[in-house]
Length: 306
Image (cartoon, rainbow, N blue to C red):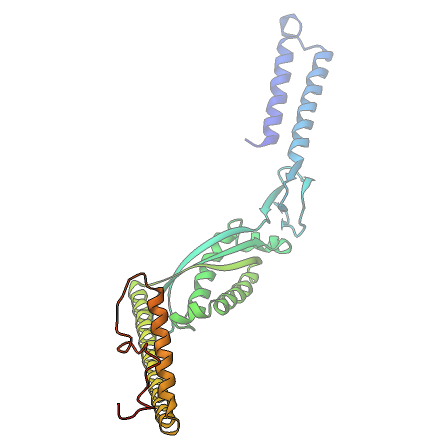
């Protein structure tokens, strides 16, 4: 029932009630009773009108008005209490705070690999475009627009890269998706505060191929290390052999030019053996001549015939 009809019906009920409570014989009600009934009805109508004429806009929200006469109005109302004409005007309240939306899309890369991407956006309506949003999209604008444009942008951008480039050039891919999505959303008066790729999942076959490639690269690096180590060992052996040959050559020259060189080496060897036996706890009885310890005995250099 229309609110005006409800008010009129309440007025008639009050008038009927006070008329039946009048004088005997069903005569007319006293003027005082009729005045009180009218006052109560007037107060009730006034209270209803005051309540129906005011509406509140909470924090983080904005409101527009829809008029039965002129349609959607262009004025935008901020937080607080505002006035409207009952019955003729209806407030439409929008939440203008950023809210997250996650969309999952299965798309293909340039090398025909299937990849599953989850894109998360923080979106909010453009406050100055609320009247246009209500005319074209309604109050569930995000559910109407975001899934379609996110899927389309993801497929168009990912198709420009190989599967491996999605990992090595992830920053570039995210930047291209963010720029394209922001431009597309602005056409519908939707502002995107953040766009991020939260998950990138490849097919099991591609993951196995990547793992096999990494194992092959590790094996190749290990083989190259073994080859390098063998080359270094070969080089060190050559250097050591050259050193020993040069040492033998120098010793031979020293023996030829200085016969006392062998006697010096014999004395040094005898000294080393003496130090070793001195540090040992064993009691030994050995021939000094056989151990080269008899340094007073003439050497072969002094007596070649010996």
